[in-house]
Image (cartoon, rainbow, N blue to C red; front, side, top):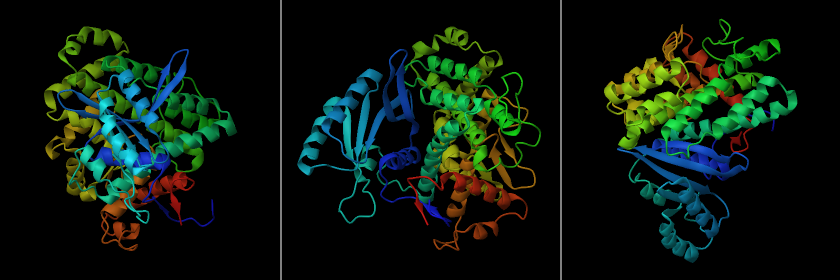
Length: 459
């Protein structure tokens, strides 16, 4: 990495994993809940394949779609493989999104053939060799997003967060080899387990059961990693069940050595999101699943959490008119807003979240409170940071909060100039307390993580 890097930016012509992030961000902001980079493994046989994206729209059922993404060379055999995965996963339809047509005549013929496999072949590439942006017309038409305008700062924030997710895992792999610590090894196993959760079972009860098994196995792992960071040894499950006083106050430490805790906090949050998503999938499944409620309770034999889940499902079904939108709202709050709310812009922040997620403003508090019902704590999950005009998701990852801070710098800009979109310009609009200081510290955590990212432009 060259010295003196002060600015990171995204490519307007993304490739490889960055192209997957680009497509994912459009899908999330365009109306879909996403499962990304997930693996199908079979005991005794190892990994069968990896799936780029499974998209969901929760209506009267779960409208799933398998999405494969290619930025470089591909051929029709890969489309056929995707068709085979559709059958294997019992997903009704798929999309194969490419940035390279290979050959115009062949591509046109293949586009006509792909629907026979219930797959749409979609082009999202350049119209002319000299173009500096991708033409997303076919993509927008395919996913019913035509005419929809996605704010560039929203798209950028989401892409940065997906990149940060990948960077955290990559750097944990490096730390694992360098330090060979018990806690980091457990974190690596946790990360793999998160990727391998069975999204491919049609029964949401089975997925809930699997997430609970992970909760039991890796319970309090972030606090235990923090203990290892402080004292050098990784305690067992019963010896350390919470952070020491003051360790999680205002912001998490942002140096790279603390990355294992920040990554673990992110993974724990992701596991909670899976549980919320599975609860929603349970409610939208055919009535045959509703008639298996007793079996459902038996499978979730995990003490108080079982009761919390049943309370959460009842709460969603009886109190939350738009509960089908909640998994996507929480993903937007995580990946676009960084799990933080600037109360100096209280009305604008709520308008923003409501407009992008589709959840009415008067229902946002319900959407947030479902976390308190599913995962009770001594305080609410969304809480105010003392001495600031900030609310944040408790126990969330500092680098992702930093990307949320950077999003506000861009979203609330005075103009497109460097001065108009600076933190100095934002600070003038904030209360004179620790609000901007916290934003800057989180921003530093994000920068420290992303400055070595291969997909970003450095200057």
